[in-house]
Image (tube, rainbow, N blue to C red):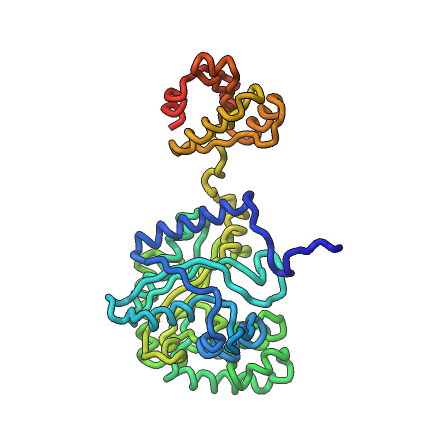
Length: 416
């Protein structure tokens, strides 16, 4: 019988890596606390309509990548492909409009998209999501971008750069859409099949296409900045003023449109790394019309999302520190089989005092136990009949090869 393996596009995050994820999450929690964002835990599956209406029916996510199924009640359910729509659903359902605005939320958890697996991109992936819901001011956009930059600064990433653009609003975007279609029409037959399909439904997505032929065709496409209404232009100018004030390294990229329909006005990415080898470590923007798309009132909002896998890979490539990998401070060694119950008692007492400890559960020889102690812990605490009679423990520092005899009280005091 063939051994069952994990589905394609998923993987096990083992202890040798999971502690790095925990470190990134802990730094995000610190930044969130400093910026006043509250953590929420949302369902990993939602009604499919939330994403088809919220994210957009013409997006690759909805058309090609969502995991959908019908539950036993005949309802169409989707594993969440992203968290922003869920955040807005929660904001509306839990009547957060009555709280002080903007409501600042953040969360972290698994997302699901049926994509072609590659390094740093999986069908189940871990993502953190930061949202400021309920305020129109461009300085809220500034705070969200500043949040992301502060997060990556604390994680130790280098050469942070803000890639930014405006994608307009329903008032001015139709003018740009027409202008872009007029520009693309003579080259329509040369576009890739995906961009041909987007031509009528969502031509802005052609600017985001990574295929060389489409990138070449759109290289000289008109900029949306030429079509922005006064409100969108004022918003963009105010945000740029703020970014300059905080000393951010900013690049305006007219091709940056993001892949989801709910974006309005601000779209941004944060890049990190040396010039020529920079990685996008997060992306986000403003989504003032998402609430209305899922049946709510007008709720201006802004946020960003970042994949934990991508952050960890970038930190490893740049040699960033993840802090200290967790390990046992103590390994308790039974010098004789008859004292194993006493070693278990010592392990329990150490753990009750907040000292990480472990012992042998395979009934191995003292020599094998000492070998495990050398691999797993800073100290080996040896107990035998002689030690029990004296009321002491032989404590060996495994890295320094020094040894001393201590009572349990002295041992706990020393290790704490």
